[in-house]
Picture 1: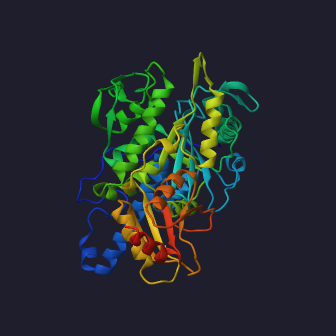
Picture 2 (picture 1 turned 90 degrees about the horizontal axis):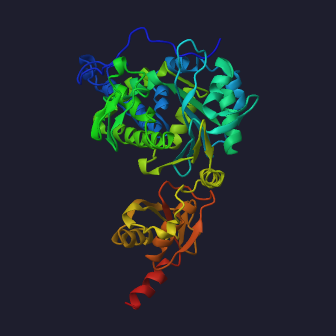
Length: 464
């Protein structure tokens, strides 16, 4: 039997009013018994906060990931269509622990009497748990590709050609061949799950950049009531949000649609993290569970999210594989694809503009300061100088060993090299070096104050 999305026995299109019990548990307002027992109440609060943190982090990767974090039964629901011995799992490449990994994210347009769905949305995400950065590369669904065993076709047909059991496996192989990268994980959510996630959140505020009137994109909507969306800032329910991310009624068709999808996911991530929305997140997980398929278990996803839990919305990069429309395909710009894939795999910014051409603002650079000299007050001295220069100072403490003769300004990757140079320019001494995995820190830059610090400060003071 193939993968399927089991219907719910009872549809819920509305979130329980504030102050009442939700369908997942009493998380909005504790019961009298819980209020009477402080210990139980605190334990319930901690559980709710943990679920919220996990769910918010996953939104950055994609709305489907909401399905993984409430109760173990949800795990069984999600995994029903993707067994541990399936072709899908066999097609994936096992990720290296603590190293960047990729996830193939798909939104499917399952149609009546079809055992397999075409992929309406195709995104490859790269998550780096060390730098806490996520990159999302969108592929137009009409992209002309070679599908193994089926010849030339549109890339979104790979899921359909593979059949109900092997569809995702064929899509994985097709994407790997097209981009020249390995896929480590897979996740698919259908249109029903998408709508339910948005409605469980209470809608998503979007600044719609152009009026949309598209009956094809609103085929999911009863009587096509969601076919028209006015331009402007507005709250989109699940029905209208799906029209927004599906519509291709633009001069450039898929490319504006993919820009809308990227805009939507960023807004979803930002708005879900607001404190008033945290109680809704477990309900979202339950709503999406029945409409999601993935190779990942709850435990695996928890490990991933704990590794990237500090991720910020600004750490999410998006880009689209561009090309030229020549009916019936999008013919890929191979040179641009090569540039984007190179940046994607290296963890660099997609923007072709050199970071050296973009002015850096100190307040946007976070810094960890550690005393590597073993001399009292040097870390505090360095942090004071940097704070006065406008930088954001995080942790200030001691290094593991007091063996540093020279002060170091450490950056993790090329994206933070310019920031490290700016930090070093504001210090009386400092050698800029790459971390290369030798230093652990979560900020943009790490400053390790060495034994040369006091002399350098004294020298600076004497020249002023």
